[in-house]
Image (cartoon, rainbow, N blue to C red; front, side):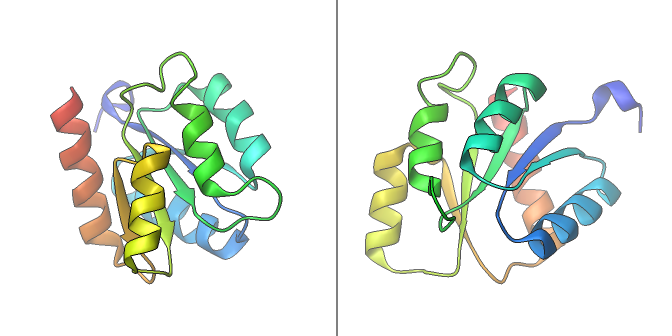
Length: 128
């Protein structure tokens, strides 16, 4: 695949294992991946990397995922960008809060990499 055609994905998650798995797995699926270990670093990376899609963990120390998503939505380029939240919770309250923050979708952990990569492609194709 031509490097110029690869989509840029930003992963914001405080769990280094999740970041490693997503970075390696999505890289093998043709995505260019950047990562950040917390909310503030994720916002800086968002500004610097100009990603095509963002994956954000809901639960992080300090600035949690809902606040990160809400902030991204106010930043240049973040208004309509696909932003998916990663969470172990699958209750109605989590879905409501994610929607109110501006998340495009919620992905429940544990997730399978290939279906996740396909979902990312679908969202990116829909916004292209």
